[in-house]
Image (tube, rainbow, N blue to C red; front, side, top):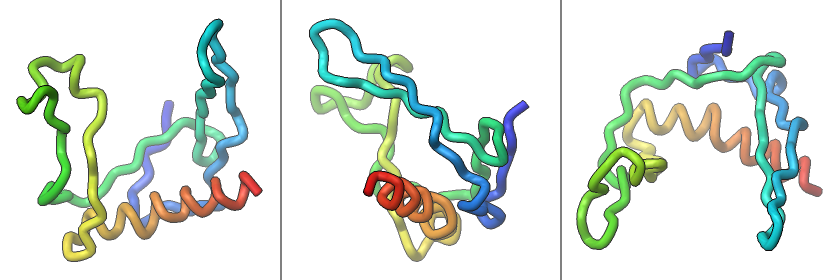
Length: 105
């Protein structure tokens, strides 16, 4: 079972992203899939409520995405005035970015 981590309790020392699988396909550029873990298990991060004041699901052809298959991602901006957003970025996402920058050197 996966770990459920509250954003406020996230500890970058328990995060690991050393398991990377090369999924290069013929006639494509190199593609890799990463399977990060937290305390040696897959994980989810639970946040406080986040107000989506910017970003959200991107438009397609000047319209909102017509079906679920077109909603594979959404933009989440760092809103320092929103406690949930601020905590997610400062406690989880920025430390993960720093981890990967350090690892790539």
